[in-house]
Structure formats: structure tokens, C-alpha cells
Length: 446
Image (tube, rainbow, N blue to C red):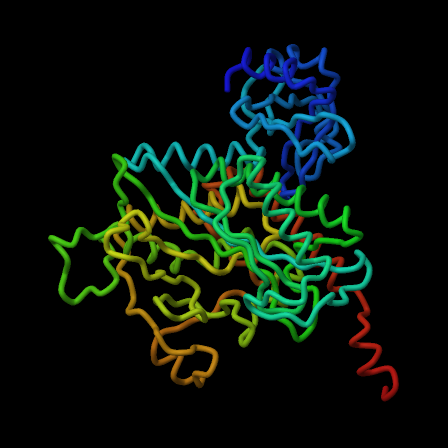
């Protein structure tokens, strides 16, 4: 949508408030509301704000930044949100001289997409599975149901909230394929139809807001925390991804040239890409799983990948190649299963793409697929098969990232250093805590 179309729609739809949203370094949605009469100025000049107040942006002596609305993201929020007719746009962040702010996560992803295009890949498509929980409040993660995977009954408030969310997102123009109850009690999932990565990153930000707002309408709290309940599966953000060239799926091996020994229909591009994801997975985990709590999910036995391997049927693997019908070649893809829904999806998409492109550039050899349950393997067997592990804590993940040339190049020096500093500070805050576990385990005996 162009500038004049936005202004015309705002007038015709009798919009009263326009919200401008942007994303900070940690993936948190920020923003402010505009009067309609200020919208033309925002579209032409951007709206200034104090960047030093936003996590990881700038120091106080260089605080002035501009939020510049991307008219392609213009959308109308559901009528019940706030009680007034409201439109929203996602913003790029610029310096006052109109140059791009290098620590804007949206800018980082844009840069990686440009690199992919320079290598002949017009589209980096992603189709995420967004998992989350409904609770009664934000203070106690008590499940609302005893449901499991694909369960339909009981039709409680959480099922009604998910159904209304599905409809609201579809009405919003967001292309969802399915929604359903997930494995854990009170856990739900929304599956997004694949789209260009930048549009999808914007979509996920908006979808999270709608999920939480509709939950609040039902007196519930929707949480994207990776592992809120001990002993239950955590929430994942599995990202199905592929590269397209000239409207053709570059991951698909045309049947006319199919290697008889290849039952996966994977082209060399796909194999190199998957090899890149595997090789650089430890380095990018502090991005795809950025919180202390993320590593309570990445443990064996809860359908979250703890080991670095790939396969087709194997949901204990880090990368899975889902089966698809041969006539649907566009469905050939790789599913990266490590990320959780609390990641900054702009940065997560960027580093996954960077890892895959590096694999293509360097022609990394792809290891043999593992179709056995890795969780039940003895350690000796894993070592024999060459299966290594993802980092098991935020601290170890940050150490891996800190030495990564690939992640530094992807994020840029400024954002890379800010991110590392923030994660080290988070780990230090966590490290010095005395937890309930320690009090229960040690206080009565020591």
C-alpha cells in the first residue's frame, strides 16, 4: 500500500488512532499512538523518539531516532481492541539524517534478505509453528485443562479464546493453516502458511498481540514463555524454511534427475543449507533461544531438540525434512526445531538464513540422517554417530555466539556487542539468585 492509499483508507474507515510499532533488540514490541492528523507527517518524515530508553538501542548521548512507518504493513486492528477504530503499522528505525539504524532488528533481517537475493534466491520463505500456553494469570502457571495433542474437548474458555484468535487473525489478513491443542496441558499452537521472512516476522509480532488481547478478553493470560511448567513440554517456534529462485523451490530435486539413493527429494542447495544450519547451530542458539528459561525446554524427553542431527520422521532431531506429495514441490522444506516463541524472530530468521547461505557458499557436506530416537540412545552410540549437543545453558550459548564470525557479521558489530552484553547481564542476574529448589533441597539438611 502506498502513502495516499493509507491516508484514504484511514479517512474512509473513520480511523481515530494510528499505532506505530517497532521491535527492540530483545524482540519486545514497542510503540506509540498517533493522532490521525499527524499521520501525513509520520509517513513523510517519521516520528522522533528517545532511543536511549529502548533496550539495546543507543547511549544517552546519541539518543535521537526516528520511527518510520512501512506502509506495506498497514492494517486495521479488530474493532474491540481499545474500543476505538485503530490502524497499525510496523516501523523501520532511522537516524535523524534518514540513514538506517544498524541495531534495528528489522534492518538486520532486510540485509540478510538482500544477501540471499545477491546469490540468486529471490525469496526466503518461512512458515512457523507458534506454541503458547493459556493460564488464569501471569503469576501462577496453573494449567486450565488436562488436554493433549489435537484434543477437542473440553470446550473451555481457552479453546474458545483460541478459536476466536484464529478467526481474528484470518480477518486481519494473516494466513493461518490450522490451530489446535498441543501436547502439554493448556498448551496451544497456531500454524502460519509460509511467506517471505520479513512479512512473517512482522506478522508474528502482530499475532502475539492479538493472542494476548483475546486471552485477556476471556479473563486469561497467554504466555510465550518457553518452559513455564516443570515436567511438561515447553513451547517451540518451529520454523519451516526454503529458498526460491525464479518462482522455483531451490530445495526441491526435480524427479527427472532424482538420485535413486535419495529418498528426500533434496537438491544440493537444500543439503548444503541444512548442513549450514547444523554446523552453525551452536553459534546461533543464543539468538533462537535467548532467555535463561529457554534452556529448561532444550532437554531430552520433551520433544525439543537437544542434539544436533537431521532426519525426516525424527522429531528428536534439530532439523527435520517433512514429507510432502511429489506434485507439491513448493512444499519441500527444512524445519528448524530449536527456536522458542520468546525469541526475536527478526534476528532468528536472519541468523538461520545466514547459516544456511554459508553452507551453500562453502558447500558443506551433509551428514547422514538419523531416524532413531536420539533421546534413548546411549552416549557412546551418539558419539559413534557423531551426534553432538546444543548448548545447555544461556551462558554456554553466549560463549559460542561470542566467538562466532558468522553471527557477528550477520548482526553487525554494534548490535552484536549490545546483545552479548545484555545476555551476560541476564545470566549474572540469574546466577546469583537463590531459587526455591535450593531452599527445598538444602535448607532442611545443611
